[in-house]
Length: 118
Image 1 (cartoon, helix red, strand yellow):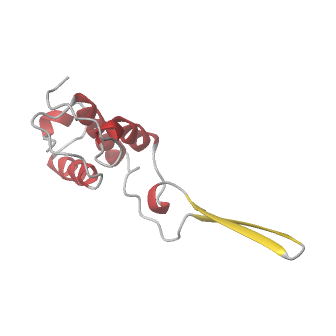
Image 2: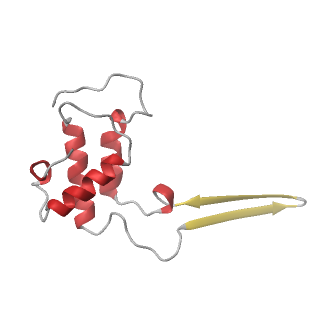
Image 3: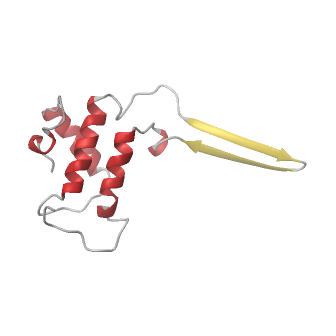
């Protein structure tokens, strides 16, 4: 688990920020670490910044669904897209955090995960 010491470099970070950061990390199915890798701590800092900037878990009254359709004679096709993860907008900080944790995701790799701080 991330602690306040891990994200203290992010201006305004407090215990509430730690809760949000740990919730965000938990939803990504990371393995348990004996020692948290630096990449995960860095990702936590980006998520803390995104949260404190109001760019994480943004409220929205309407979906971000975009639909595109085309018809040619009797053939038609349509595509529907959602922005961000599950239709939620995603900040640059969150995208960086996802890239940082990607090598550690259980679903993303069959390689062993380092257990010591780099």
